[in-house]
Length: 262
Image (cartoon, rainbow, N blue to C red; front, top):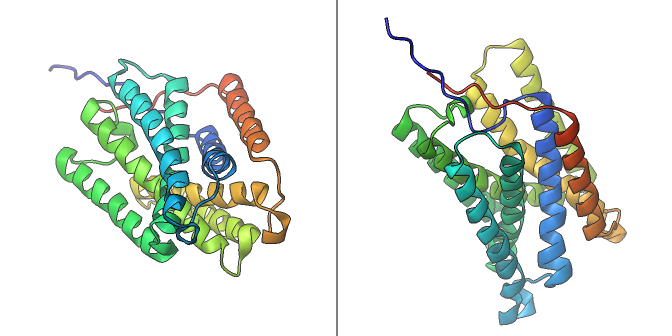
């Protein structure tokens, strides 16, 4: 009998630390993306005229180029690299922030239209991934094809989460209410994980998508003006603080690669 070799995953094992850093990274993506597209380039909307599109578009281009470069290094890497992985996640969440704002505000799709379009892209990516490789289990992300699908899906989900978070937060719930809503939804998923046999793959992707709007609403709560329900913290300062927290967690709490598959 020939023993099959277990491959090592290229992404971190899904642990509590993973989720804590993921939420911090999505919050960082919101403050960092807004710092570039709003504070530096200037917030732009269709009402600002033809030149108004450029702020979100330029921000998306900057973070998009960074994302493509980091994702390429990540896919080509021969082994699990924790720093490279989280740098790519942060690039995807900042790109998702500016891209969602470009779609919903500059182009004018609006939150409902943008959210529906992006949800369709996430589902299309997952379905195509499953039909191509037979699984969308994160533990099977141990080869270039699976990783390519993984990063495409993640980028779409990060963008969806931004649009969804902004949609809910701009309604009657406000930033605090929206954060509590998405936090409660994640709590329900945690209970399903602990107390039921619901598909772990389904729960992972559901949680992964929901952490993004949670981070978006928390990020907006930190840096939006008090008059709009925020705390009006400095976006660069909030971004630097969140970055430091992520670095400390990576340094202090060991993370291992996912188990891969046979």
